Image (cartoon, rainbow, N blue to C red; front, side):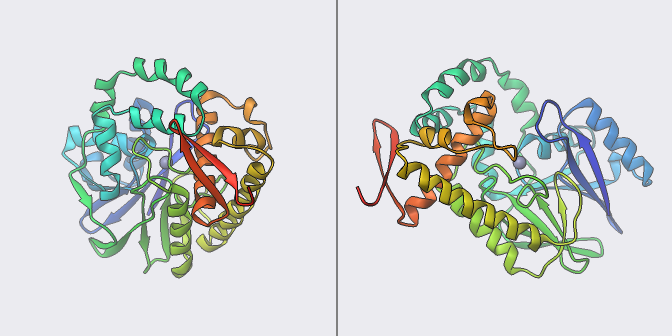
Amino acid sequence: MHRIPLPLPNDGLHAVNVYAIATSEGLVLIDSGWALAEARDLLESALGGIGFGFEDITRFLITHSHRDHYTLAVEVRRLFGTRIAVGIGEQANFEAIIEGQVEAQFADMISWGAVELAEKLRPVFAKTDHDAVKRVYELPDEWIPGAQDIVIGDRVLRAIPTPGHTRGHLVFADPEAGLLFSGDHVLPHITPSIGFEPARAELPLGDYLDSLRLVRAMPDMRMMPAHGPVSDSVHTRVDELLVHHDVRLAATLEAVRDGAVTAWDAAHKLSWTSRGRRFDELDTFNRTLAVGETAAHLDVLVVRGELKSSTVDGVVEYLPLEQ
Ligand SMILES: [Zn+2]
């Protein structure tokens, strides 16, 4: 099993890890990297270093639809006919991407009270070369329908749905070897974004916390994340992520008690990144992530009965219970 970090363009993350598993029936890759010439060349030479070429890849198992995980697989398939498998839960995201559906995303921004961001992003979305997007988001060959064992040569990988980061995210466990390919579900240094996807789930953070508990209930394994270094224990990192979200939920509840009405308001009262930056210091992309993240926390507080909400002209307003 080989970890191959591949480059990303203009992204907060430095690299995406592709894992190559050599079996008696050829090579299986978990995630593919971003469709960039530089990444493709690096992947080719890394595979060459272990005695393989693109033609030896029998299958890509993809954790989720984000382009740093999926799009290079489509390029390789175009040349070699390689099969690509993705969790069925991502189907709605693929359809939204391929059909260029963006209105749901703007409706989300409006519901968060983020009109300012919607206005900033509308021209950016309008300029996107939709044909280019469609070329790298051709559908996979296979939808993995749920938790299931995948036999690859002499190994068995278990695909496990872990919705939250995206609605159809999968992790792949190799229980025999004690490895968990955790995709973006459990990452070593950062907390994964929640529900940053074109067809956002109803309650992405609720799904995410359930998926963390699901992985915590499995035997502990070595963590093979999609970004950052390998580490000894998935459980240790899951515990830290659960604490992080407890702290964020408490701070988000406090923001509403302190007068925030919308997700936009609450995001301004919270601090951001590990450096504790103000919301206004973030760029447009990161403000969009931040306000979506805040909405996800507010919605969990409503489901838990700690806040009330109502929708006024498409904008969701949150209120403390005592009012
Ligand atoms: Zn991702």
